[in-house]
Structure formats: C-alpha cells, structure tokens
Amino acid sequence: MRIIAGTLRHRIIDMVNIESTRETQDKVRGAIFNMIGQFFDYDYCLDLFSGSGSMAIEAYSRGVKNIVLNDINKKAYETSLNNVKKLNITNYEIYNLDYKEFLNKDNHKYDLIFLDPPYKMNNIEEMITLCNPLLNKNGMIVFEMGIDSVYPKNVLNLSIYKEKTYGIKRVVVYKEMKWFYGFRYY
Image 1 (cartoon, helix red, strand yellow):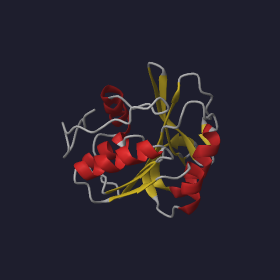
Image 2 (image 1 turned 30 degrees about the horizontal axis):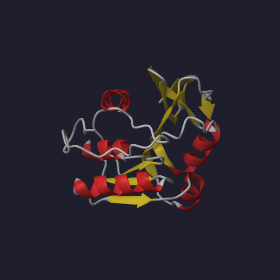
Image 3 (image 1 turned 90 degrees about the vertical axis):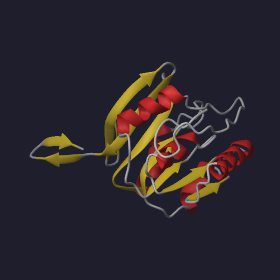
C-alpha cells in the first residue's frame, strides 16, 4: 500500500493482513481525500480504528500537523506503530485501546476524525455522538461503513456534508451545519 499525495507521496506502508481489518485501498483513499479536500492546515487528526494507519498517515502527508491512531487489535497497533516509525513521523500518538475507553480518556480537539470500524458494529449514531465533543468547530467526521449500513442524516449539531459509495463501502462525511437566513450551509 502506498501514500498517494503530499510530502510522503509514493512511500510504501505495511498492511495489517488479518481478516478482521479492511484496508482502505489507494483508489478509495484518494477519492475520500478528494471529497474532503486535498491538503490541510489542521492541527490534529484522529484515526480511531486505525488498522495500518493509512488514513492518518495520508492526512499527515497532506499537511495535518499531529496524528493520533488507535486500534484495539494488537497486530493493527503494531503495524501502525511500525509505519509511522518507518516514515519518520514524529508528531504522533498511538494507542491500543477499545474505542470507548480511548474516547473517554482523550482530551484533544480534532479537525478531522476517521471512523472505519468493523462492519458488524452497527452503532453508527453512538460512535458519532461519542466523537462529537472531541471535534473542533468546522471539523469533519469521515465514516466508512458497509453499503447496507443504516446511518443517521443528522447527529446532534452534525449533518451529512457529503456521501459516496465505492463498491461495498459507503463513505459519509459529517460536518457541523450552520444557518443563515433560513438556509443551511457548512
């Protein structure tokens, strides 16, 4: 697997290669970054179900200053750790915790949160609700889910900003909505 754009473009990262972890393929990862913006001037990005860390590492390559990775799976945690070290990324934190435990302990504010949990986890609204307090104003939650997943259009102050389907995967981007004279905008 390779990094698509930015300062680490064309660098290769390792995959986790276990059945419970789905890697976001290069083509889909590129499409996701086309949806949310190519390059960033963000302080913090969270990859909550990080797997190999490819989404956070791609965001770092595209300008995010600090990345935080978490995965409950020990092999995924070790793969992410090896990938950030291999790429000489210094502004990272990495955890091997259950996502709820991590969210209860974390005190960062994020500009970008990636959620790509196992498809069998169907508590999408709960995950977004738990992440919402950690989201900076104008921040985004990028949620990768199975194509048949049932997901909310609005959660608290967040609404769907963009959504797209890629094969068996659906990507939904949530962002805080604002109102101006009765019109909704982001």
